[in-house]
Length: 157
Image 1: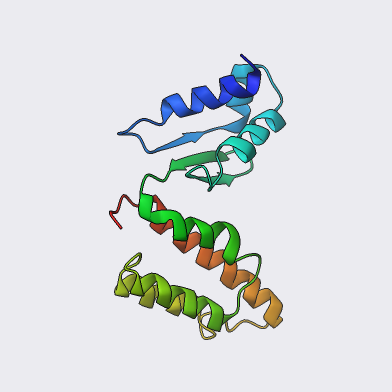
Image 2: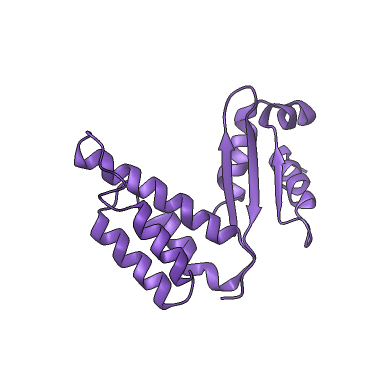
């Protein structure tokens, strides 16, 4: 069995029906398998993607971690597409509001969640003395983060 396959199997074994997420330290995992941390990054980037039904969160540094969340809902396809493809690196307020409206109409997010999302990506919330392209980048990151949180919830859509 190749090292990449072993790392993938190890992580997937930790993700059970009851345990839909797992937190790992990249360095500890690399040490356990006797490989470079870049090998762990490779496995995560190629075998635990949004298209495969996983959301990866990471924090670098001494107290850093990798959180792998298995998204189990079949109704999440549109949400995964939005996080992975549609939003991109930047998004305008109008585009974001339109996407949030579509999610609300399809009952992927509640109306209350949609209102909070609209508020968080609004011009008022991002009234900072920075150029508009930076605001659009912040808006995209915020929206992706909010949608990732929705994706991690165990909902029937």
